[in-house]
Image (cartoon, rainbow, N blue to C red):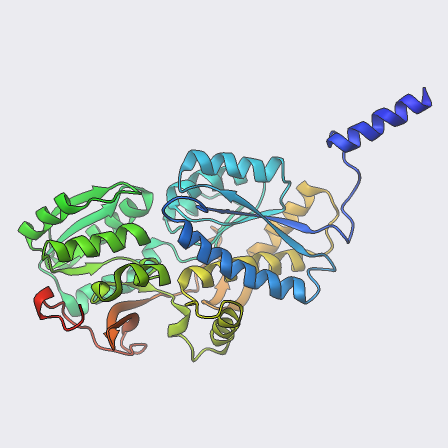
Length: 406
């Protein structure tokens, strides 16, 4: 009987039916990372991942957290809510992650953050900006990125003080990401007296935007608001040139990634957005240190907003785990300890000082308004507003035929 009982116990341990005991100092601390690691947004998720891997090198290279290394476990959402829900459930219940980080695509993160809250697991969203994520009063949900009202505040002020458009139109991604942004901009347009001529939408992964752009050309608005991810934003610029449509495009800074500039080249000239691009804040020693370390790890790569958001996201998680103290091995208790530590976060990172408001939203980061301008026909973003941060003046878009760089 004794041998049989021991054999059953060994089999149960092997199959994971019962726990082998609390984690030891040698066991890594598992952090779940959600993102669209496949599909049209994979390159953006890849930039986020590169920033996280830099943070992981620095954390584990200096001894880990209380003697334990961090291990990242990835869950692929493909920017689809159903896939994101499946991925996060696996991270929580099969991979037994302590915290969930990452996060791109607002519709996905609205769903996955609710799952994390139900499972009483802290989730720290890195990139998705829909205000819905943090405005529901979920106590396990945090976000290290400004939400869309925060991102668009500077642009709204610029519209009122500088551009003062009389007519506008919307060409938005058909998602929470796009529609939330449209609501904010519609309210501002009403406030400043700009007439909304029409609204058009497109699906993630779309490739032909010529019908909508042709309609926009007939309307001829002063400004077109265009919230889109990298691939779609690049295709829209290319097709706008093909149709000889000129306007002031306004999006968000996440469009202006290394991949975006490779796809568009000089075609991206004059496009605008709001950004926390780290290379635009090199006077800050913490930001400059991040940029230097990133370029050393990834020679020739541009440390853009997604890479800095990924870096800061993992650093915030690691900081909270460290302040939570020695983990007991009881996953439920440890998750609560980390959740409590996250509430008191106060750390300076590549995007600035990170503190959370009671709803879990970072409330200390203020994006700048940027415009794509060309230097030697090479595109890059330059701060044009607020004026005390500006490095260049706003340039009105010129007709395609008059542009020097082709």
